[in-house]
Image (cartoon, rainbow, N blue to C red):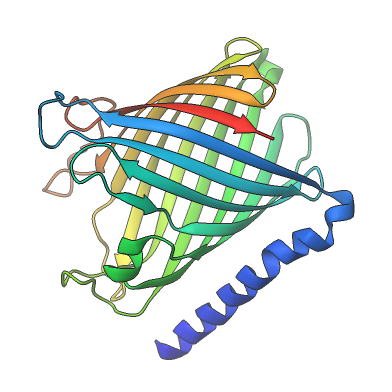
Length: 272
């Protein structure tokens, strides 16, 4: 285990050191951008309930487009609770690289993504003893333009991650998550030139450091987006998540809406 951990750390260190500077070296042929999302999210419980959640977040993405198919980014999200203890926190930030490496025609393309995470979230460091995380994904996107549905795009994304942690158990004595896999399916529909609708569902599988599988989880979401200007957008959405299976491990537990588990959100997007 120590040998594997050292190997993962070495690879991730090279990724962190190398990804973003590579974009800087390619800046003559690249385009820099900054994208921000300001989001307000709330659960659907009555306002007087103590377990009602209301949060805001600011998402910052710094990108470097090296070519039509390659892009480097750095991303971090700041969160602020507006109920309960009103705590502020940071997400785990990451350096990322994406590449649309296979595009045989205008309808189909396959892209890959790599991320190297920094443990900027306090709970990830102190509770889960996270040191870093490696993430990789492949995404296949297909437009239905040949079926005279050019405004409809289907996508399938498979992803995986590996956590590097100091301890195999968290501060509460429960097994830490060592690695995981995710499968996401999404549909995007362009309603007009400025209005679009999207929906997705993702199933996640996780294992601990003893290769014991934890319970699968799901997330379902949909959103209505409006492009105000070329660099300004609004999004109104809904998400719900939980255990994929019921307690018996067999019966399906996936829901598309539940007033106790669903959350709704609004997002203001701005790019410059």
